[in-house]
Image (cartoon, rainbow, N blue to C red; front, side, top):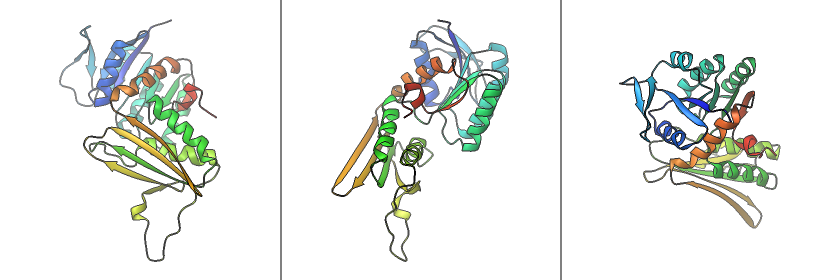
Amino acid sequence: MKLITVVVHGVTGKMGREVVSAICREPGIKLVGAVDVDVSRDYLVLPDGSGKVPLSSALEGMLTALKPDVMIDFSVAKAALPAIQIALKKKVYVVSGTTGLTNTDLAKIDKLAKANGVGAIVASNFALSAVVMMHLAGIAARYFDYAEIIELHHNTKADAPSGTAISTAKAMAQAKGKPFNKLPVEKGRTLKSRGEQVRGIPIHSVRLPGLLAHQEVLLGAMGQTLSIRHDTVGRDCYMPGVMLSVKAIVGLKGLTVGLGPILGLEG
């Protein structure tokens, strides 16, 4: 199998550092460069003591010089889209875990990837148990008319609801074929305390120190409820999904949204 060379975009963030460590442990994948918006030196020392790789804030120059097979992106939405577009134009495959990209953004990525004969995977969550949780929630959604999602994350997470929660709600509504039922609201009252509504599903966001990433999908019907829960206790849980995506993407064209198709969980 050909060695897959990788550049990591957003390398100084928590997820970026975790990705670098995972690549150092992964057979068949080699880190050749790293990029972040604000860097103080021109190299990154690898955590396994195997050496160092070029580090820069200039993504385009890095991709031109190193010609990697894949760019892994864990940054922020406003930085991710331009970076992904640069990579695709240079015929570099993309694996991105950045949330906040719009449907318009995804359409641009798909069009650009196809035009350049490469592939891109954009996923809101790379934890395999989270992907299975979302798949099971989609199956269950067909049989319930009421559902709610509680997502709990660390207090430094900026966005709410989480990308995973929004993706879950959309997938559930798609599987059901219509939005979920909303509970009636008394005249003069508001829905402020009921969470953000996505396809008829209230999403409740909790942000506290001591948490990492957790989500519970609750479905209810007459005389019964169903709970599907996913818990993350370490960022290393995302790495098997990221490494799997890097190896899978080099055989794909266009945009793949989520890990479900990679795991054969499309239906």
